[in-house]
Length: 291
Image (cartoon, one colour):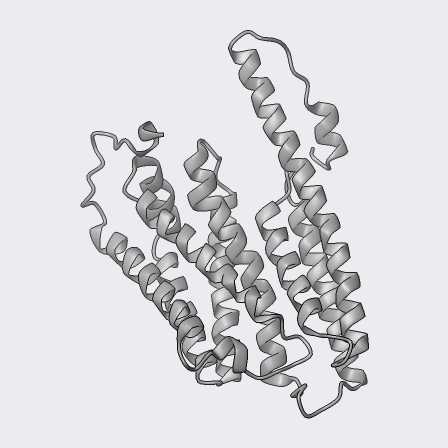
């Protein structure tokens, strides 16, 4: 793995130093801000507005995983391959993402949910742009997978879910004092059983191997809704969330099968390269939706 971080002769660690420092400072700041919201006396993920789309508080512990992976991205930018992808392709989109995320955290902490919704929509749009840029690149080594594809797949799936959660907080009823009406039931079914499932299926079939981390983020969120929205609060929401959570496992399974097939194909191609035997991945690719 050391060879992955080896810099070519024309690449100095001080090239584009301002952007590199901005990436590191932004990642550390957002990580600290999100950590503070979890351990602070305000306890914002436990005492925020209760809606019929609110997940269990432990769902938000996906944030530290994403932030740690993004710190790995900031480390990878000092390598030749990392500089090519993070500095030359992603560019200033990463500091912009950190800024939008920080503003979302600030708004959510102060229970300004309408502002939080606006900043989360902007966050999601920046993540989507980075996600498209990353997915358009070819994976060359394990560092590309760990420090680019994995964090931004999780980031994209997670922020997609947070847009709906924040929208319910900004525009929906307070579940602690108001029962769910027909409109709440309709919007919950639309968001949880149709839109999020459509997004998860798009993750699963967008590539031959699918997008397992993004599907995992969506499934994680829906299961957290099912756990938090008990039958005592709303039987409709509880059982509707259960159905959606079970369906989300199908997209997870499809992505897992696609990833396993990709690994087998890669290993088989390596065997051919070293003279161990032929491989034919056309049939498997066709079965998994590849072209």
